[in-house]
Image 1 (cartoon, helix red, strand yellow):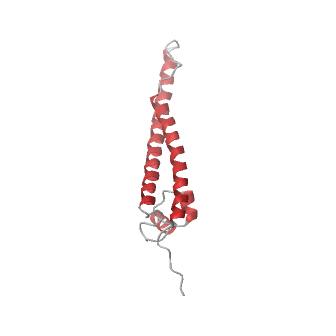
Image 2: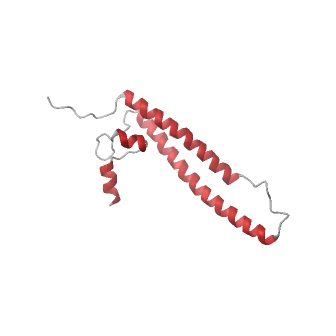
Image 3: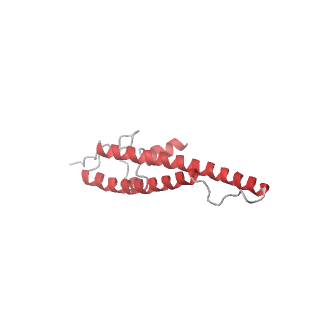
Length: 128
């Protein structure tokens, strides 16, 4: 008798993936909060008492740092949204199914990229 191809992950598998995602989500949110505090934080060590030239250089560096932190925070927020969407797919029992082929994404890939919605074959084809 031919082996029937699985069309979704078992509830046990989904619970395992959920634990992985919740762990990554907690870390991602902590990183996001840290980045946001970096952006909104006003420096305790002000440059009011130093030379005007140094103050301009200091402000320029602070602006660049805030811009970079802003980009990182935006990227982190997107990652958080992808992880939260993966949790919804787990609840709907559609997690781990390639949105292009309808086949199961291998567990190894999902453990590394738990928010993946495409199998490796489709992802590689997209890059070309």
